[in-house]
Image (tube, rainbow, N blue to C red; front, side):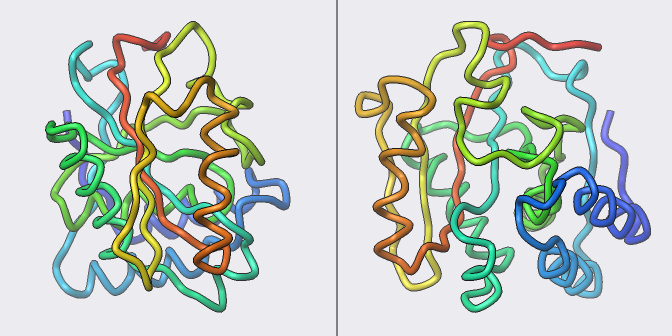
Length: 204
């Protein structure tokens, strides 16, 4: 069941993401400013529990990648992140049921709500690690023999790119392949990848 979040909820989330980031993941303040602007425009964010998802629902992890300091100089926005999610949908020819945080630490704890508000999708009350992380193999999505997935990347000054599933041999390969794209666009991009909950362990 979807639960609509108030702006106070988002503010509390930003504070909590900053604490859980334990120094990583960048500053959640800029994503929070994006959320304040979206709420002022009339958009709203919604939350859903992982237990409410069907095994064949498709969930996108949405967030940013790159040096946090560069993210202050080259600020992302809700529409750039939404382009990354939509690029992934076009690549896999499926629509996402929901979005989720790629990490609860720092700015990525708030970022998925930016795209979700624009796309009228809920955000799953879950994340793959419980803090910020430097590489994808450190998350629960790399465990339990979960299938490796394609990823899309968008930079503010680019048309975007996707990393096909066939080029990603393991979870840590995702970061290895993606970093050259980040460096080409001054180390600041938005990203999206998709998974079916049935391929992962879910706790009610």
